[in-house]
Image (cartoon, rainbow, N blue to C red; front, side, top):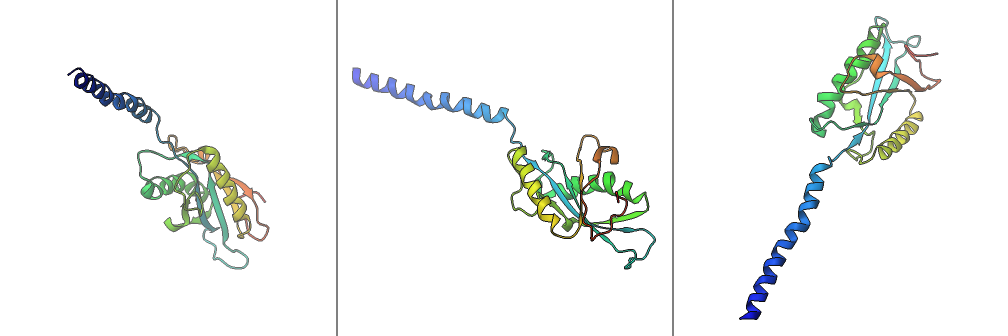
Length: 180
């Protein structure tokens, strides 16, 4: 009888032991958000408004690369481009640029998260920065000018926030609206 009672007592103690061990792990997972980092690459065509595209007025091939940002949690990755990236870019980069007499054309197919890699996001800012730099280096050989721009979804207020800046000038391309 004493052996049965001891066995029941030990099995009862062991049955509660896994619950005590797993609780702190589950609580820790809930405390730290699953942060993902990404950057945006947008390929565009630029030309002068109201001027026919010709050899004297050719269109410019241009890429815009964003800074590395934390992926918004309120929008799933598959709809991020259409719901957040394109409206932000149009309002804060394209519209101010077009107000100066130039046209900037791009479509949804020209917007890529993290360049041409298949990885949807990165776990660290450093990984995303490294891939962004690789994508910029790759684009330097593609025949076009490269600009950077800042994404700040909390404060979408035009060029003063997006700060488009030339980071690579292809001498074979025109550079409309940019430094000579």
